Figure 1 (tube, rainbow, N blue to C red):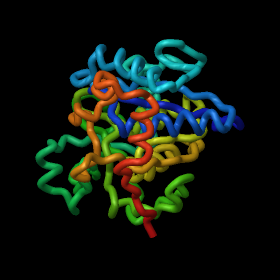
Figure 2 (figure 1 turned 30 degrees about the horizontal axis):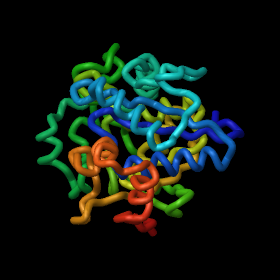
Figure 3 (figure 1 turned 135 degrees about the vertical axis):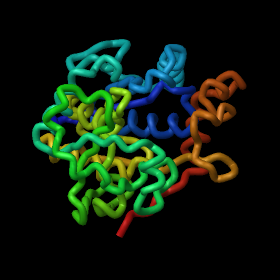
Length: 290
């Protein structure tokens, strides 16, 4: 249930130091919560235990506070909808997985990553999930799995259906299931819930009313709307921010150490300078889809 008062969130993943792009998005999220007189929640998205490290958790808390961003619930403060670290929320994800399994909305997939890449039915965007060929789609043994581990679990998308939503910043968008994206992974074979499922479950449980994040996740919104519908959860509003790129026009990633908030702090930059640079320089706008 979406609350009738504003609840926004910050959802960093501690796989490296936060960079200028994060500063921009998180500052916008904080300002939108402040303007609405609402609450801002910090969630530590640390599901990827192989890449997430405790020192990056500490660094992200320090860097966000250094920027002047404040939150009222989070892994450091606690709150009514915790725990606020994804690594501690397995039971929530498992409950959602069981509901999807029992409704025959997901199926086990034994295809390797290489199989999927070689059989992809269409080119995929950079860093996006390839369109799955449907090789395991006819499987009917989902009910035989008591636990999700050992196989990938894919959500069966309604081929040909148009998923429409109006972003509060970038306007109307439409994506066609089966064409723009295919059956996507909700639980990985290494027994880790995938991003799409985890954020849907967490945003719902934490009563998030608006999701503010980067425009690279616009297509993920279409996938998540399908999951929300399948789980009978009301959708929040969405506000996608332009991406911040380096001087070569490449979208910032955590490998851009020279543009990390931590590095800029150490070179003597002030919070105002870091935010000013990130808010005015090299922002790439993603055009609405027809």
